[in-house]
Length: 339
Image 1 (cartoon, rainbow, N blue to C red):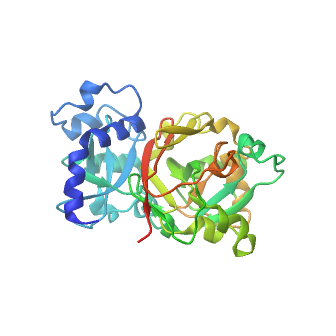
Image 2: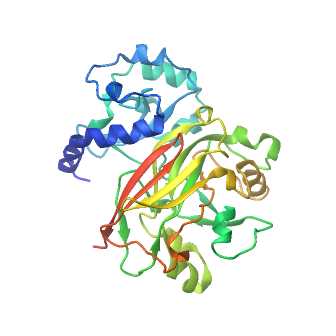
């Protein structure tokens, strides 16, 4: 993205503030969000516990392409930079083993910057693994007339699929069956091997909103029936807007989850429909695969995807996808033509 486009983003303060406010929750009034008053960082951090944090990766006009790591203010309108110690990277922070109290102290010394003046990136970039679970919502099984699976179906996506919460999704010219799948994404906080279900949630750092974009022809009909290409085309995994620490999510299995295309609701479900819950997924996977800090697990999608509608619906250039999960926030991605 060019510096000029970053400057253009600064004109979208209302949209960005609204999106982050959605991540924070409805308790923030519009008058508070629209206030132009500067909030001293120490005052802000005295109003919350260290654990209740939302982490973002971002760029500024002044910093050019340099990726920064920051912590959002409680009202979601400002971000405090903690990049210097953690190389501007959430995974570096997770690997460091630093406590959230240390982050709180570091952020309190920073001068907050308005979220409207930055470009939000994916809250995690270049994870070693993006692990996905298919057929993990009862409604998604029902819309395909498939039985509830007795074991989870795992597949993966490449890290090159990741884009930010407001970035474009490419309508690759080799496919004409691009579909949407809003998903709850789990971010792993520490190395996990041979983990039991009883303590599996100890290895979760937090959560974010994901879109598991899929090229259905390549997923179902081509590539010998293997999912990899259909799921791993560039830009096929928007994430964001923030990595929400797990302490802010009372129960990840009781969250509303929605997706709309061009303002028309397509998916409306609840994570309570998950067939295999997060602790179960982590236990199963870590019996044979080691999860590392920053690894991402996409937990599945509810009913309402395009390919199982009658008639089937697929995304095209110009479409806008809104993906939202209660407590975690909302991402918005435009589909653009392949260049």
